[in-house]
Image (tube, rainbow, N blue to C red):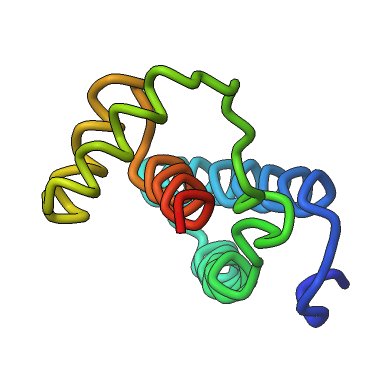
Length: 125
């Protein structure tokens, strides 16, 4: 019944979502076998109804816990690199260009690079 709560443990949500997907797969296989070989109307109606309910549950399941997923990434202190970034900021480079440079040099995603840039910019002010 974790669907009806906004905040649930992400590991439990992943297990719950995995079970829903496996039930979804099994029901589709049963439905295909029924349509190929058995052609029982009652089984088709039952499996189709349960499939619709599973789709609703899958759409309502939270994908992740935002507090766990979007924590600030801790990057090792690198004074020379931070000095280069500060120099780029002081020379009037656009923030976007500096973030692209950080992403390229540190091999980071967009969000961690932006957080790293914000941290460096805040410490230089």
